[in-house]
Each structure stands twice: as structure tokens, then as C-alpha cells.
Amino acid sequence: MLVAWNYRYRNSPMDHIDPRARFIFSFAVLFAATTTWNPNILFAVFIISITWYSLGRLTWKDTRFGWLMISIMLFTMIVINTIITGGGAGGVVPPGGQLVWPNGVSIFGRQLNLGLTIERLWFAVSQLMRLLSISMVFIMIPYTMDSRAYGVTFSKLGMPDRLAYTMELSFRFMPTLARNFQVTLDAQRARGFELDAGKGNIVQKIRQVAPLLIPVTMNAIVSSEDIANAMDLRGFGLRKRTWLYKLQFRWWDWAIIAFGALMLAVVLILAYRFDMRLFHVPDWWYGLFGS
Amino acid sequence: MEKTVTTGKKKNIWQFGTNQVVYAAIGAALYAVVTWAFNIWQIPGAGNVGVRPAVVIPMFFGIAFGPIVGFITGFVGNILSDMLSGYGFWVWWDIGNGIMGLIPGLFSAMIFKYNEQKSILRAELSVVLGTALGMALAAISEMWVSGADINTAIVANFLPAFITNIIWGLILLPILMIAYAAIVQRSGR
Image 1 (cartoon, chains in turn purple, green):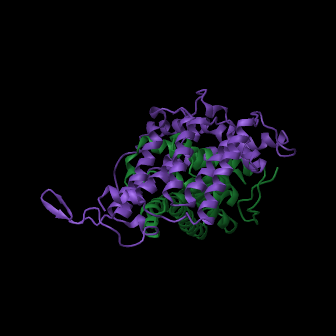
Image 2 (spheres, chains in turn green, yellow):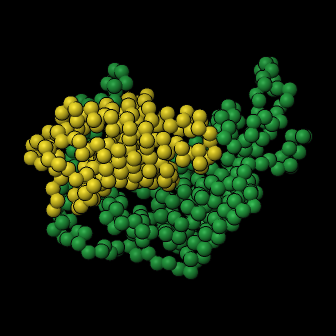
Image 3 (cartoon, chains in turn purple, blue):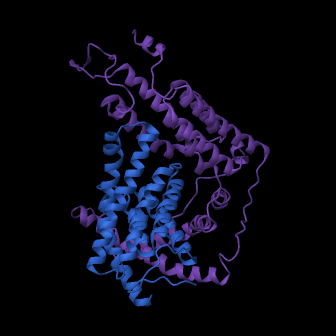
């Protein structure tokens, strides 16, 4: 079993942006998108996110697994909770409203009253803009950020050195642990172990995982003592840590941070100073339904 | 080098020395690898009740090595597994996973012999509390992010994650604790 990171160098604009600037900008988008339900502001944030995503030059083939997961989440939250049941809109959309199909809908000869309102449908659009904005900036991180950069990035963003180094160290352990996992699985299978035997009740099925999980976990713990000893012998933690992977801010990184901060400030001012925080339906949306 | 005390002595659960750095790193890497492996294999035994037997790893590392190690195992491990699977970076779920290791870690101060019945019962209680708190925090964050109401957050986000994680945790944690007790005994830690 080979551990393969999704990152590869694409010489895209995103590859030349400092990871610290990227994280700061991504969180600015997250806070901006979650501050308001105003459709104009959400649309502006959505366009900014699309532009940001395009800087990564990611293909559909690269990111399809990530988008599959996002699609399931969007389907549950928007189609099932907001459009079909109306539960997802309960906290934001006021009760009542105009029905999209006032006379019901005929499906397979049966007249159904779905109860879907124009307001709820607009809320679904707003939700889609908000969730896609956030998804786009965060889903691209594993594909566009070198795994060697995580430890130093979090350290430079203010995370304690030991914590940042823990993150760095876990990246290095993964290939070894993946190999151990595969070797253990092969060894257990050679002894007649069947992970997917499909016998017994739920508890028995869960317990079937134990012959695989226990040796892998215990081996990892036992071997970690040697690693800790080796680190202590080399004086780990006695002085401030230096990092092999260097980060350097360039003028465009500062510009991105400034833009992110400005965007967030503008959204906060509009939302709280000019009361553009709450959900509302634009008139043209009602016009689409002949209202 | 500080020694991790595992039997019969008072523990300093907030210690974060070299040993804890390595345990946390190993735990996080293990959590990521096992989660990823079970995701790609779609194991039928797991498929019936959820696909994350690996959730027991942050719980166990919390119980064995304290709250900081437990939290990092869950938090960093979830980031790494999402990176491997290409799912992106979802910090509120990462924190939720961290809490699933942190709460058992707080109980580690009361656990000295891993194969004792009362230790196992305390650990099981910590699994319930940790999973409830961690998944509640992540589900409530979805209300903030997606604007869902409390019912949706509970039914669509909290319950599926809570129920599957708790089943895996309650069944697998005692098995890991008993196995670890044997190692502790054998190596005289």
C-alpha cells in the first residue's frame, strides 16, 4: 500500500503564493461567507472564491474525489434539508412565503403538494453560493500545498514549535506505517484472517478488525520509544527549531493578505453597520415565478 | 528523557516532552493511514455500521498518553486523512476529532492499569463524552457554516457521526487497552 499525496507541482500561480498568505486568505473567505446571508455579498465572495480556485489550475480528474464528498454534503444540506423537508431553512427563512407550485404538482398521475416556497428555493441558492465559496478555497489545499510546508507554515503562523514539529513528523511516519499496515494485513491473511468474512452480528464484525488494528498500533507505539530516544540524544527541544523548508513573503503575498483583510472588513461593515446581514429575496427572483 | 508512567503512579497528563511529540506524531499518522485504508477498501464489515474503525486511535492515544497527545492524534490525523483522500481542509471537523481524543485523555489521570474493569469502564465513559462533545461541536459548526437549523445539524450531522464513532470506540477501545496492558507489563513501563 503506497501513500501518495495529492500534491504535485503545476507551476500554477498558487504554487508561488506563500502558504501563510493562503491560509490567512482562506480563513478570511470562510469568515466573510459565514457573516451574512445577503445575496449580493455572497455572490461577490463566490466570484472571489472561483477566481482563487482557478489560480490552482486543478483539473476535474485531480479533485473528483473531493468534489464527490462535497456533492454528498451539498445534496444532503440543500436538496434534502432545505428543498424537500424545509428543515435546513428553519433557522433563517421566515415561516410562510409564496408557494412555487400553488396548485401542487402532478407526478405519475398523482397530485402532490410539495410546499416548496420561492423563499426557500432562494435560500437554497444562497446556501449553494456560501458552501461552494468555502469548499473551493479549502478543498484545493491538499492538491496545491507541498506536504513539507505544513509544519513550517503552522510554526510561522504562531503554533508552538513542538506542535508544528509533531505535524511535520507525522508526515514522515505515514509511508512507514502504511507499509506496516500492509505487511500486517498480508501476514494475518496468510494465517487465514478474513477482514470481510461477513459473518456474525455488528459487534462480531467490528471485532474482526482487531487482529489488524492491534498489531499495527502496538508496533507503532513500541517503535516510537526508539525514535524518542534518538531525538533526545540529538538534543531535541533544547533550542528554537530551524526548518529545512524556507518560507518567504513576496509582495504579492502581502497584497493577498491585504485583500483578504479588506474583503473581510468590508463584509463586516456592510453586515453590521449597514444591516446587510440577514436573508432576503431579491425582487427579480419573484419575477421568475410570475409573482 | 521523561518516562511515561503507566502503572500505579501519579501521572502528569499535561506533559508534552519528546516522548509525547513522537506518540502524537505516530498516533496522527496511524489515524490517517487506517482511516484512508478503510476508506479505499470499503470493507463490508465496516460498511454496515460506518467506515471509520480508526476513530478508536485518538481515543486510545488519549487514554494511554494524555489529552494533548489524544487531541493532536485526532486533529492532525483527520487533517492528514482528508489530505490523502483529497477531501480538503475542514477545520471544525478536525477539532471535533481532536476532542474525541482530548476527553479520553482527561480521563487518563484516573487510569493506571489498562486491563482493570474499572479502568475500562472509565475509558468507555470517556468515549461517550468525547464523541458526544467532539461531534456536537463539529455539527454545531455546520449550523454556522451552512445555515442549517438545530434539527438538521442533529439529524444530518451529529447523529450519524456520533452513533458510528461510539460503536467503534466502545467495542475496540477495551481490546486495545488490554493489548497495551500486556505490552506495559512485558516491558516494565
